[in-house]
Image (cartoon, rainbow, N blue to C red; front, side, top):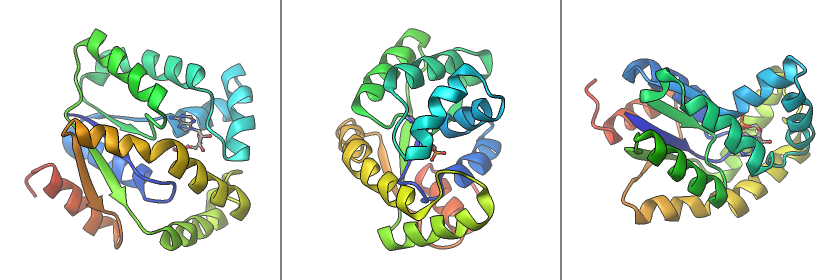
Length: 188
Ligand code: AMP
């Protein structure tokens, strides 16, 4: 299965993508995780990405697209869950091109829906333990705004293509996982 998992910051994408990838035997590709690994290893990519991440801005499309292209072309990406990509209309177009070249079309886009106050409170809670430099209240609020402006229009694009499944992301982790399985018609 080839799947995109979408949702605003704090919706639980990373958590759900990780366990879903295990359930369906797909590669979990998180652009945020790849950027953070590069920051940790102090690569050139990491140094560039960090400036944007710390400000709650998106890393420029050119950089992000090239990174995803390399990752998707590997053998283990026959089945994948993209977590945190695409996030802009330009990235949607690039992804379309990459997947057409690889002959690996998308099957479905799952979008987690969580109300805004719940998102902010989850992220503030995560901030206490995550050690993420982009989990301060000011940056959290900015990231929500960037999501609304730049990423939420993608829901309409995938909706028009008939690929979108919206899933209620409120509640316990297991409960949300079960709803995702239902949306994908996976057996329990
Ligand atoms: P995440 O872990 O998905 O919340 O991503 C953390 C940060 O990494 C984001 O706030 C962006 O700065 C950067 N990032 C992750 N994915 C993308 C993407 N698809 N496009 C641009 N920036 C991204």
